[in-house]
Image (tube, rainbow, N blue to C red; front, side, top):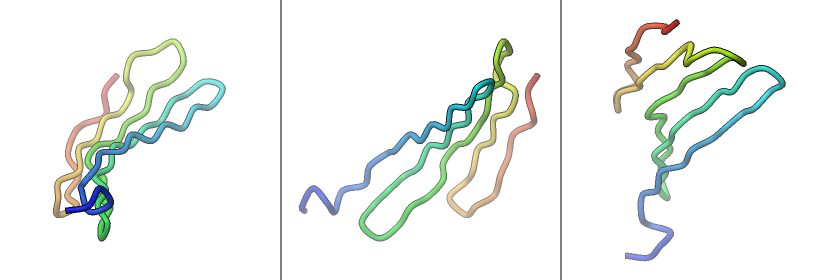
Length: 64
C-alpha cells in the first residue's frame, strides 16, 4: 500500500470575522466523505453540530 492509497482525516476550517465553521472529512484516493460539521459564533459556545453517517444521514440538534 502506498501513502496515497491510505485513508486520511482532514479538518477544514472557515473563519470569518465573527464565526467559525468546520468540517471533518475522511479522504481516500477514491472517495471523500463528510463525517462531522459544525459552526460557532463569536462570544458564544458551539451553536450547531451535525454528525453525518456514512450513508449521508445527518443527525444532531442545533445547540445553543
